Image (cartoon, rainbow, N blue to C red; front, side, top):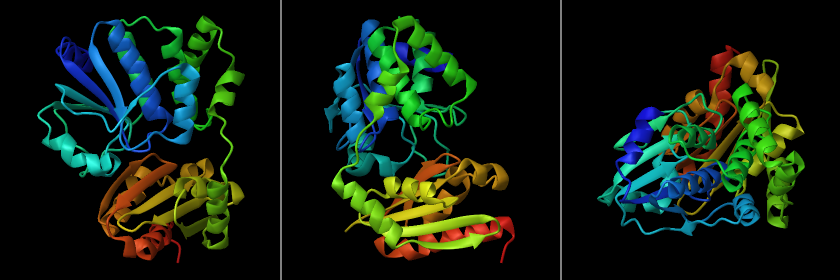
Length: 327
């Protein structure tokens, strides 16, 4: 962390853009907000932006803490810090602009590293961290930033969201949350209320269609399920896990892109040691001619070969059977 702090200090007085991935989730947006506020406190010239959009829940977070980010920001800066992203697919149509820019590039992230992971002039990637916002918190402490209430709220919201409401939190996360909630008298119920967003009709329909179209097999003691829909693939995958599946893959087919979201429950991971981000996603990314990354129980990939959805989903069954030595 000291190295990345010292690198950032070299850009004081220069222009810095903190950039989040497309449809930026709470971890990405909260990392941008917290780091931006901290750097501004130290006199840095910094802006924050995301590609294409921020997610629905991320927009609610921004409103709740009185913050904002630019959409498709101008890249005429000295340093672009890419937060919570590891693959070109997360840059979407911005990829060409980012890498043709004369700006130096830095990555701060916690996703699994693959041979197709993004390249940058400076990188700080900790796969053991529960979130990017956790790394940002450590960086702010290293920079001796005074954590104020607004930064604290961004850290709290990003951490709770990325750990699935603390289901995957580690002791360090609880220590940070306890410290910040006590210092600023923040009620955890406020955190939960801020992160609560009712599903709109289109997302509920997508979940129902995913259930209607599901294909599943019992592999060993586990239920493995796949489905295809048009959108909301991550939400649909989560709903199928809650419906009883142990491992789920859901594909969303677009005109020029295919997105595949994977989810598993903790029991599946602990018993099989199949890490979705490290073990399964590389094979899927190769099939759909794309990139992807993730974590042990949640991962995703984007690719160009829309007609390979069935093959990619079939791969999930095949990989699991091979790994578990099950016919």
